Image (tube, rainbow, N blue to C red; front, side, top):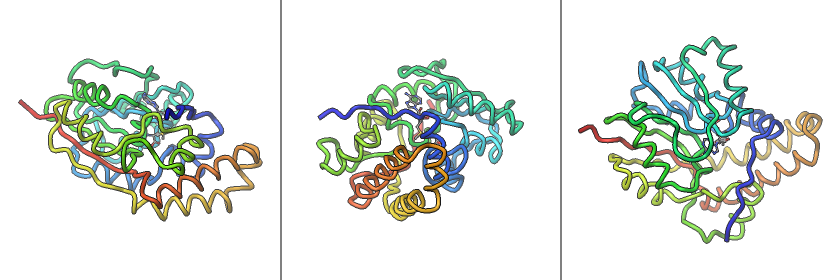
Amino acid sequence: MTIEQTQEYDEALVTLLEAVWGEGYLSPGGPDEIRTIVEGVALGGKSVLDIGCGTGGITRFLADTYRPAHIVGIDIDAGLIRRANERASAAGLAGILSYQTVTPGPLPFADGSFDVVFSKDAMVHIPDKEALFADIHRVLRPGGVVAASDWMSSTEAPFSPEMIYYLEREGLGFGIGSPPRYQAAMAKAGFRDIRFIDRNAWYQPRARREYETLKGPLYDGLAARLGRDFVEHEIEVWRSLAVVVDSGELRPGLFWAEKPAP
Ligand SMILES: C[S@@+](CC[C@H](N)C(=O)[O-])C[C@H]1O[C@@H](n2cnc3c(N)ncnc32)[C@H](O)[C@@H]1O
């Protein structure tokens, strides 16, 4: 079964996601989760790539907190990149942060351009994990690391009817894969010291809370701005998301890997 990739981060969706997850965040966990992802990763003075940077809240947090030499955020959505640029300038971080709109496919950077490749909840949109990790390996310097989070599945397809229902509502699914699939793709690319942390138990109560918040305190304000139909659709997305998080089929997770130094 093919599930269409239809998720588009348009103005309405970005407004709703930032209302739930915080300004600049199109995924859960906020700064605490970013600290967890980069714990033990040397960032000070380093060159960092953020794949799927969205509106750039994470890059601003990383720049402010860890003072890398430079972070390049890339995204396929020009509207998100425009916002990320505006917010970086407003925050006085334009010297450290730069953003580029990219087309899906090979990363537009020379071999060995980065010390760290970061990504949060964006690789799910990229179906060819083997090509993705081979390319990340290519743009990393020897000794460089990938530190990331993503929406993963407990198994490869075929999925349960509940999972298919959720993925179709969300417009995701084309690229969702299991940790073993990511592990194999990273190993094939030449990474070593590959580690995973499952975040399903961490996210379960959060998903429920987000659903209740959307139905409760956020509802009237968002419905007035974005229309009731849109907000009702997103509430149904969240209800169905909580079902597959509870069942364990949708498994947010973090992972790290290193490109060996010669
Ligand atoms: C769930 S959002 C996460 C954004 C950001 N990382 C965050 O956590 O706030 C996923 C992002 O990946 C971007 N994206 C999708 N396909 C991509 C690709 N092939 N290359 C780069 N970014 C992509 C989307 O436009 C979107 O901004």
